[in-house]
Every structure is written in structure tokens, then in C-alpha cells.
Length: 193
Image 1 (cartoon, rainbow, N blue to C red):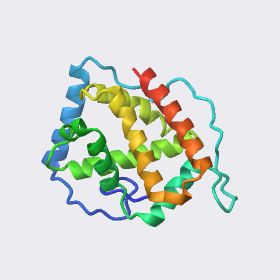
Image 2: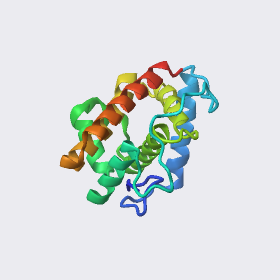
Image 3: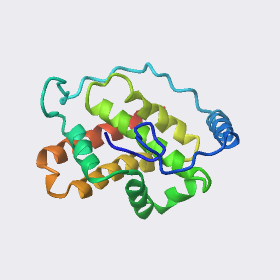
Image 4: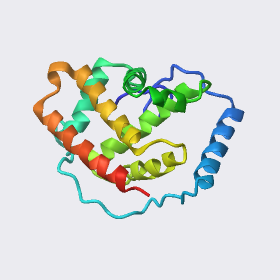
């Protein structure tokens, strides 16, 4: 699987974790920010979304899911997607840089990317529930002042980073699957409340 620094998908971490005071402060800030902005907690059990076109068969030798395959191919070429994704995000959207604290932000970035990849893979695959995090996080990021367009741009940046990494292995099938996925994700993000 793809490795991200400080994230749930990481095999190893290249960052020093923040101390407990920093973690506690981040948790308090997040809850306070969301409720102070007047946002309601996001329900995990929202409206059901139809099953996707691409589902991996565990008995198959190769995954037929082009989204999952793009991540698998990238994992062979790159030890850690985190710096590549955020370098591109900050180059294309400089305003995003100020949204991250300087201390402990590598851990936050890695964790955010890991959760995003997990949600994207679930959304493109079985839709067992992790994908619901997308709508919840879109609503909670409103409390941080993150524009929905920037939230959607994060997914676009991930796809562009994978495309660059894969080079000639970025097939028409993978491209079509990502285009469809990005359009569906944009719809979910814009509809989230």
C-alpha cells in the first residue's frame, strides 16, 4: 500500500510525533472551531450512495479497479506520497500553506493524506463506509474556513501527483476512472452540510 508520513497507511514514519499537549490542543481546537462556526456534527449514516462500477475481486490476480491500481503502481515508484502531494498543493494553491501549523504539521499532513486515500479507495471500491468521511470532513473543514473548491482541489492534486509518478503507465482506463471519480467527489463535497 502507499506510504504516507505520519498517516494510518504508513509502514514507517519520517517525522517526530508532537507531544501530548500539542495533540490535545489540536483536538480542542477542532471541536471548538466546528461548533463555534455553527456546524452540526456529521452523521456517519447519511444517504446511501449507489455502488461503484469498479469492485476488486479478492480472487483476481490483478485488481480491476483502476483507482486502486494507480495507487499500487505509485507505491512501487515512491516511498512516501506526502511531500509530493503537498509540494504540488502548495504550488497550485499557495493559500493552503497558511492553513497548516508550522509545528507538527508533517504529522497532520501525513494523517490527512492517509485518511483521504483510504476514503478514496473505499469510494472507488466497495463503499463499505470509509468514504463517508469525505462529506463529514468537507463540512468540518468549513469550520476552518477552507473553501469547498480547495477541498475538492486536494483530490485533484492527488490524482495529478499519481499521474506524474505513473508516467506512461497512466492508462486511458485509469484516466477515465479518475475523471469520473473526481466529478463524483466534487458532487459529494458540494452537497455536504
